[in-house]
Image (cartoon, rainbow, N blue to C red; front, side):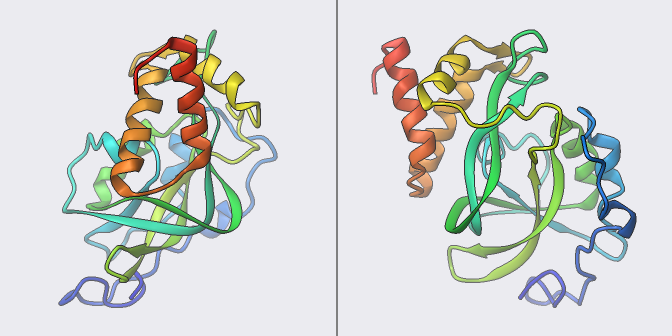
Length: 220
């Protein structure tokens, strides 16, 4: 069942996570800080909880209260280190590189799903403010169940988007970047370990990890 149906067993029906109509038409270039824009994107009226899908740092850094946490996946999206980080894993002068999702038909992206109170998005919208927007997505849990959730994606029209680059160059940029949340390399290495625990073979992440270890001569 999706969020438009009964949701969890025993719960009453809740409205689907439809975007607010005025946000269907986005500006040609997104502002760097998307926190205010995200507040207008989904209507949580009538909902006591919402599912959130995490594919990057949300897998290993849940700095928010949650009601439930379950491994899950979404289809048609692939991880890419194509988003700049000016506020967490880098600085405006030397941005780091963090994940976003790009469309990839047939690709299954594994991650972690959290059921949270709607009020938690006040914190999450600030955490993900550097170019990320909330989108609704169907999710599949490890047991085969389904729910609708929200996912933060930094699209290519946001000001912090860095785009594609050779994996060795991405690793070199990550090795040099540090921000308020710590070294960019820590983000990559913790992510790679988390994906192995989930059983997700993300060739893009693991290739950059290998380049970083070669760059810094880190043991496996």
